[in-house]
Image (tube, rainbow, N blue to C red; front, side, top):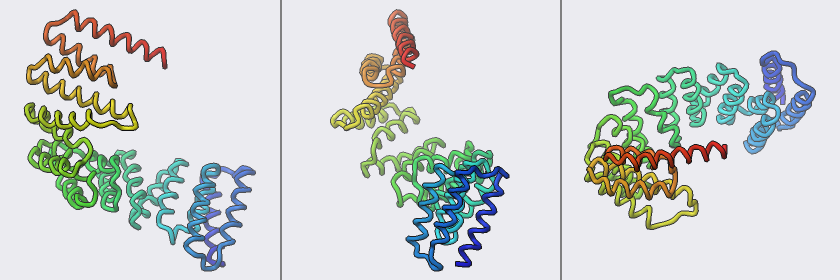
Length: 325
């Protein structure tokens, strides 16, 4: 009990001194309650009891932000993710140095959320090297979210490919399929087409969503429009042969694919197919994108009257959106 009281006293002192802003009466009440709840823990509390205190901190900080750290610090030594919550709490209060300190501590203890948050803080400080370092660390700790994988390579991005980034992706390549997609795109950006093609074809075999479209876009990047058409049409067969509960989502996917096909046909000089795909796309989703492409397509062919009509339709669409907003 003496140990708990000492932790509590030190925590309360730090909290009360933070920003030198006096507690309101409500905060004082919440602080008193926190003190009581923490003191009620046994001398050797179970992990379940500590987890309960941690969750209480998450609940309390929604209303009393400064009181959250009282709970988090009382269990931080035994629950590493409390470091992440402390970092978020200090960040929300504008105390960036303390936020970074706790994020880095959590990262060192294997908390992937803390690593990603440290990367976020460094990115906001425009320290791109450290931002990338901590996002790589988050990935190595099992964070395979799209945003994290994107940030692994985007910070410190240069014209040449970065071996550190490639090796980081390769370490995790067989742990999560999203890593393979991220590495394929990274290769593609740097014109490592053979490496990207190999990975995208693996994704096709593994039935990764939209893999055929991704491969088609790679061939567009390479200006190999025959292969681009081949793979985009394979994606089209899939997209137009099944439905999803989310109608808006699948219509957006279909419209995007039709616009890509239109671009391929335009580059191949098949303006009729390009036009047909854009006309279909504008009936599905993001009508303005298809209209802009249609207008350019007509102008390219010297069909100025049709281009004028499309631009008028586009202007009317903009007016309608503005009225709704």
